[in-house]
Image (tube, rainbow, N blue to C red; front, side, top):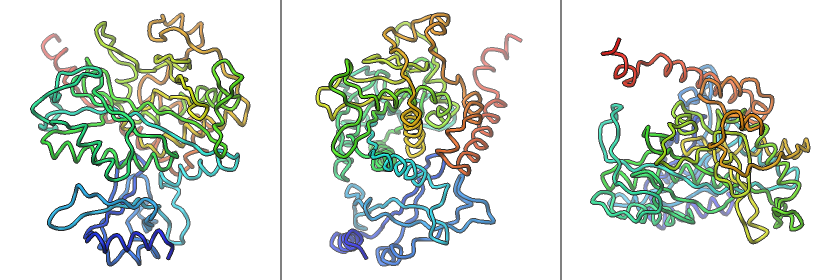
Length: 450
């Protein structure tokens, strides 16, 4: 037994922890959990916990359902805010294994680990920093009716309301108490919309933190009688929720994206990485924006009195928030990074980070050339102007995104054939269900007029 496992077992005893939740994630990014008693954890470290993989989205067929959830002791964290008469609880993330001890190809954590190992072979460590947006709405029926936001605030407003009092403060304190560092938090553009930014970390840690973040935010919201939703676009006439993600590669302690001699302080590695993100953007959009609703955010109704920064066209720019890939201003060399703005906060972070890293590494491997950066508001250009400048649109709906992804050579290489095939099947099914559904919009528009 290693030291980290011993630390976990000792902590369980010292803090009277009665429940240990073992977490893992299905292919779509839904958090799954199995609870074990502390007395069973030592054997779980040695043998894992058996699960039925056929019951998990994308994991296995019935004929090959036996799988093992192996707890990762480095992810152990006590949840003190869940304490009570029954004692505190804790959680650990798991790696999913096959009965022979090999990694399960369907495990999203394994998909990301494989890409991180590929980056490591080239001497790179991949770091990410997400800006997570979400909505707080009043609790109500989930029957499709329009939710009521908890406030009428706007961008950076200091809101005061009777529900969800000091919500962000409580959420940030809860996150900090379990070791997830928060950099900023503020009110976003739309009524009820919030943003909490997590600090930079290696991509696997960040993905684990995002899954934990969603759970904690929803729990804090429920404790205050409201609901938190990471749905990309709950309202027709308001901006949607993205998860702008900053990316960088390090070689040891040195930021591989920095070059002090370059006008933008970007290295050749950074430029090739950005080029890879752009060349393959349409191919990985089905992963970073995997829901029917995601495309309502990317291609919203244009309203003159609303701020819309949804990056729907393949372009990059320095400081340009209308570009798909933005190069933020930075002072210190180790702060050199790029920001991908299309990804939404309802994505599976393991798969999203894997495909973005795969695209960037492909750019580095093949020596992709970076085109000129966008200086104008890409949304304000006419279609003819965007075409002339080479700004191709992202897929406009899930069906198009699936078709583009299905023709990709890169994405099945990154995800593995099992995850790639399941993902396509699942998303085609989702699109077909959506396509056949008669919506309130249609009844409102046509029932009386036709």
